[in-house]
Length: 593
Image (cartoon, rainbow, N blue to C red):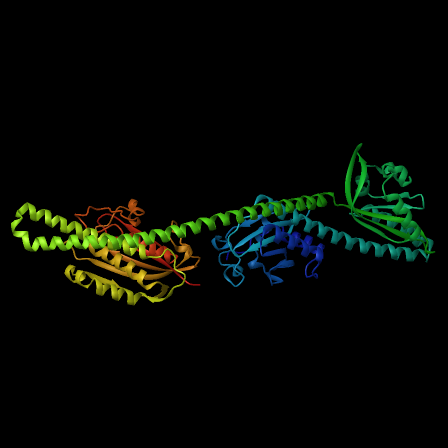
């Protein structure tokens, strides 16, 4: 595996990460909701919120993945955060030099596809990523990528809120300590008030303080003034005077109730209609109204802390709308698939009936043709035997041609009958020994092999699942062709070989109907006349010949039978050749999973 990428200013990045106090924290529902949503939107089995530490990647939330952390050397996320401006997509990790030998790719977790949207602070520091993972090559649509990036931003928002809440808790503790010190001395009270004002002014979260029933604005830091669209001149004024647009909205009534009851009030995603830079706007806030008490335990002021969540809310609304559209599209699509499936079912039924009728016709027609043909051949033989001497040279030539035509017709009918007998689809196969089939074929071709003094080299052949009679026909046709298309006077040299190969290793143009992941490749190689490869598709069609009948006998059906046998077994057949340099026929037969 490649060395871990060098991260810019890694020490500073780790310092920023540690500020969020998130590493090794317990699972939290908000983060788990995001990974579940990411897995659902991207249709992936695995989704992770990953944070990159010094020597590990740790998963804050994980869907569909058992590990809590992995070494940094195995980290995809460590690469993703180096390009924090965009999502890193690895379509097939097995083909990517960065990850091809990664244990997460080669081992039991079998990671193939990875897409990671960086989790980036507003200062541009990448802490980790929100990623989705699959065990097969995939791609994400633009909308899925946008959704993944939006969710990554939501993770950053949660981290910021976590940090802000922690800081706020610390600061509240300090405030309470200062209030307690007020009971000791007036000097401590003054010091506490100064510290409190400084705390609010410097708080990263928008904070303000309202004193008394009239809710006089005692303090308001710059983030809060920015939300209001006001300047410090509003400090000292009642809230209703400083922000008259609050009239008719629920905030003033809620504040009055908090002042009366002394109970903290919290709200999420609450709309607020404000006037900012002279323009009316509507923003959404998470906010808290917290009552403050004097030494006598009476409420004297209310602290308001708020976070603008307008952008996150709109992102969620857009995401929800997108999900709704996806669900609607999936339901158009399901209906169309159902309708198309019904159409294909009817078409398949029609094809089955048509195939059955064609097979019956071919079988009956071949039988009906055999009888008159046998009579023609018999009478031709009798004529030759009884009257051959009286017919003269021309008559004997006609008689010879008639006998030859009858023999060719007989071979053609026999091959057509064999072609029609091969079923279009077998329901079940049995274990078949290719070794035994080849031995039987060689016995059938024994005379021709002896006459041509053919040299055959046959490697050890396996047992496969198939139909014995069809595979016998296939091998006999291939070996017969190898013998036939070796020129007269040349010794036929033929090789039969087998090997196993994966589906991905099949020739690109091969499309077997079987879903098997492994195939047995059966190859027959000769050193005969060969052919031009531009005719490869043609030679597997019925009645297609590349040579005249006078040169090489045959009906043009043999290789079509081989094609059908391969198809029936869920496999495929192809050939490679050059004129004058022999031919190689390769049959790919599926191996059951």
